[in-house]
Length: 193
Image 1: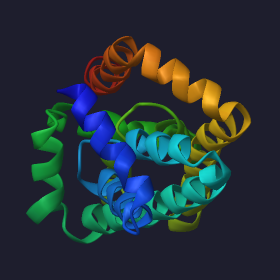
Image 2: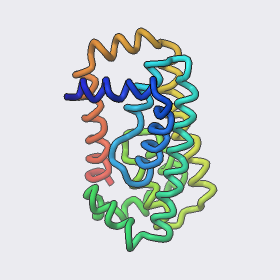
Image 3: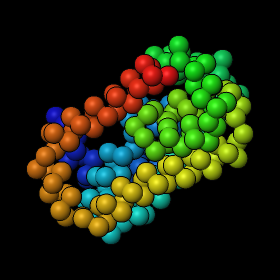
């Protein structure tokens, strides 16, 4: 089943909608959606390595704009929507702890969440709810998300076909590792913070 999904995602690179799908996924993941855009970014960039940096830019822009939407959700609509999203991810009990991270580390908290598998949406919504400085939030988001996605783009641009054959050969193992990292990000927030 995962293999079929992988092949289906790869086909987006051959359609005029691949870039839009990547943008929408990156936007949604940064504010409310649980699936990270890395999967589609990798699939699109692997299918056409010459466009890897273009896809990384699309992913970065979508993610930062989605992070801004997450910030607005927290800033203006925390009671209506924000708490429901945090509750969905089982992180209501960590809400105050995330606020303390913002007080102590401000931009670093956003940057770390933006670069790592830690669910970025939790930090974008919380940033708005705790009303951290928006320009600092925006700069940290731009830097962390761009570094993350352009690193992926560069690796695929540099190693292109080799990366694709590596992924094709070890797809099942890589899928498991990816899921462990994704779930680990949620667990890290839940238990450590």
